[in-house]
Length: 261
Ligand code: MG
Ligand code: MG
Image 1 (cartoon, rainbow, N blue to C red):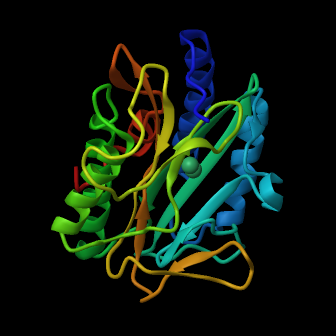
Image 2: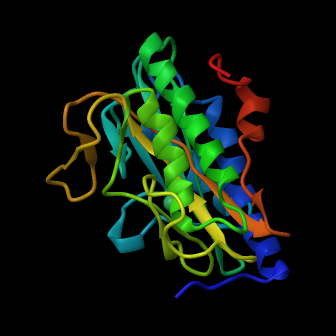
């Protein structure tokens, strides 16, 4: 069942979405070759608690950390390790918080040092896919219109759209109805209505759309070992239109806009 949110509830979710956005902004200037993802995780946990939030992923379904840090061929749900980042890596950082009883959920794929041109292009198109998905999240459309927009843009560029993992409703739970796949057919799925709040999060692979689950039960990697990108925003339908509650502006203020923009 979909819980449509009141304006008051959307205001509270916006606070949570802003805190995850600020957390990624704070982390962005720390991301460089030689830095361990586990260090980023500890910084994020302290930052969230200092701002009266609680890490949303820590302990959820038994997840051991504040951040999911997914490097190169890791798609999502990477567990932060002590292995230092290397020049040319990409790292997708996904972060959740809960504050005042509502969740925020947000992700960005960062470049570490100098990244190969084909990988930078993947980031650009994934980013654009997210923007197109958000634009489709409006009254008069249906849920699959979001995925249709994402999929069309990504596949036009020859990329693989991950099927097994999807966006989702967001509120008092991190994962609520409806599921928001990054693929779909035009005009299918539930009607998009006022008060809908969803996390839209394309996961796009440089190669095949297929993924593999690693034995640790968390890590999901591309089946062909090629890189994968992940960007996520929290979006509310207000006055019939998409309103983005999270923002990449804190990242851009800290390290500038990515060179592909
Ligand atoms: Mg997320
Ligand atoms: Mg999510």
